[in-house]
Length: 80
View 1 (cartoon, rainbow, N blue to C red):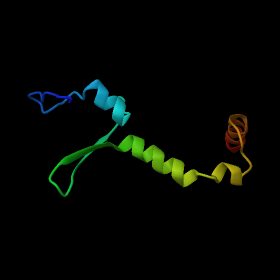
View 2: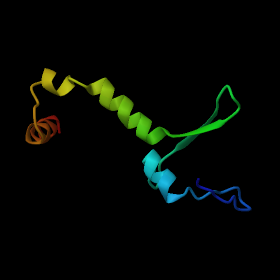
View 3: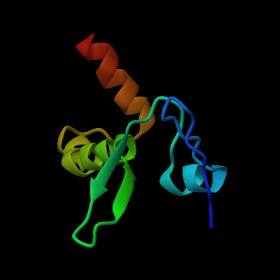
View 4: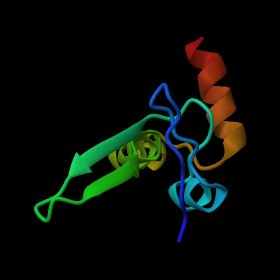
């Protein structure tokens, strides 16, 4: 069990274990949603955005003939 105290300003420091579980780092945005049971669910929307982007671009590199990091860098230089 992890506890956190709310400051006078309404700020909360997430316990280290929770930050690790959520992959939270400085600057990330957190989403609080109340589920059907009335519980508040916390998620790291920064991590979710990266996962969605990863899914959306899956297969795109192969489609343009990019197979490794060197080829990605070469393509970036060509576009610039």
